[in-house]
Length: 524
Ligand code: RVP
Image (cartoon, rainbow, N blue to C red):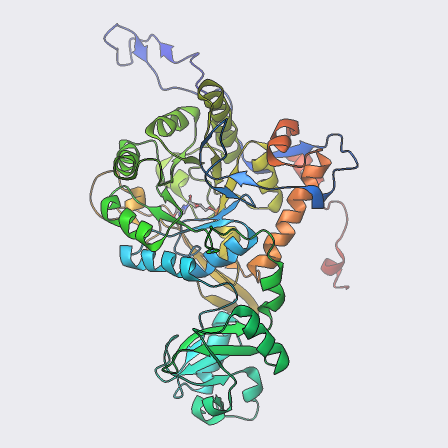
């Protein structure tokens, strides 16, 4: 919070206020810290404290102390409102694990609403084809697509589109790269439609599809409509996945919960389109949220829809910013300026605050507000998570949930291309403030409709495989640390957590040190 000592100063050489006193800038007395500068000190754990007993359930939107929140998540993770992170594929994968994606808003209203609609209409286990080829595609083209998506089963449609007339299937068993020319056309080596086992898209349930897969020993079953157009594919490998997602986050119609980003400019058109597509929660996406534009956006939503439409706001980095957005009516508030991995706002504009300090400050204000009003406003810590343990620290510091960009961008489900450099796979990841994204609305202060300078970079991140595997590992680390602190729920964790700042020398002590790692000596 603000420290007022030293804020007033008398000096003839500085500009005077009306009262003859000179006002100087406000100085926070504490330096601002990042997550990497903190550690948790374990507390007593009882025999009940084991990971399987831990619940990571958390509120997404504000609620009164006597009521239940209208929306909760089963895990405290959301994916960032970014072109390189949150599309419909990501949203479905994350909701299956119990979290929520916010579909990026830096695209046309129609395109964003279409993504939301695909999530809401998705039937678990029925996959829309994302690797599409036509009979004229060459073997070279097949290999290129395989490298890009990692998916070896490709539907061959007449026009090469996801929902075109199905004419065959190609899998890695249909070709031998060493014996065939890369110019060979798919038509000559695909398994043609006449030899495929398929099912009717309108009349087949997931159970029936899975039964057929098992009976006929298939790896994939295509589902087509009356005109032989491809609608979905059901994969054998998804069978276990479809049965195992205990934490998946669905609405009363069994559709996955999904969020979407909006901006402070075109909300009067964008919001109704997203609502018509079935969106569950909105978030104003802005690099700096302590602004009249955010208040006006929330005011418009309240006037049009009352409290039924849930909208988060941000980003802010201190208690004052929190109060402003709380009073404006935000359903949740996002914390973080300049800490994102692709973000250069601090270098470019000199604004921001260390993510840990910002979060601690805002969470203290959230708790104060709760005591005063009985209204609890969830806090989202957005950006700057590097290691899994940073998530645990953020939750201990009071975040109700996290927003992650880089983390999710590394997975199969992110919308970007996977590329190979020197034998290693990477995924593309770029900031919303980069020239590539051109998301001027996120940075707009009411001026010209363009990005005047970049606040983000265009980059690569190491490819990390499937979202499910990574999220499961991350969550098991969080649950384990919570047990070390004697906590089985997130509110209990916050209450019991003991945090310590670490010196730079003790950070060195925290990694492997004073040993020579085996691989450095070239031994296994
Ligand atoms: P990270 O998870 O560290 O990659 O950070 C992601 C966050 O960074 C986003 O949720 C957003 O708040 C912020 N961001 C997105 N684009 C940019 C930029 O171009 N500066 N910053």
